[in-house]
Image (cartoon, rainbow, N blue to C red):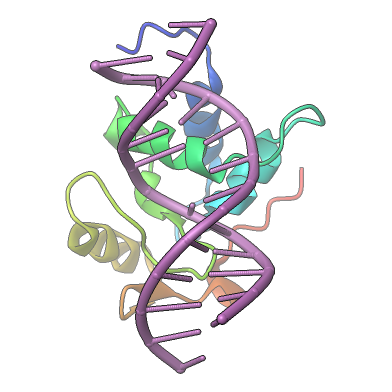
Length: 108
DNA sequence: CCGATGACGCGCC
DNA sequence: GGGCGCGCCATCG
């Protein structure tokens, strides 16, 4: 259970879970939201948090794509990730999504 | 505490 | 355009 209580990871899962269906977000966006003035966007940590994702079903990590909209890794297979995105209405081409059209733009 | 790794991003060749 | 390396933060060992 990742002994670490409310940690960076939890924030990542929280933001990821906020991603509306049919929409995708980049690690940079998530990291940017979690990025505090004291901490720079940790794309790495974000990816790690999702990789560790203890509650996959509750955290739509499959909606998180790379900066180019490219489907990065996924605990289960990118193929499945791609499939889930398409199921939500996100067009995935060659393992890539059109950020210009599906990028999650939720400006607090 | 230190060292190494990782679902990234960007720069450079 | 494609391939390679470095830097970033956080977590794991």
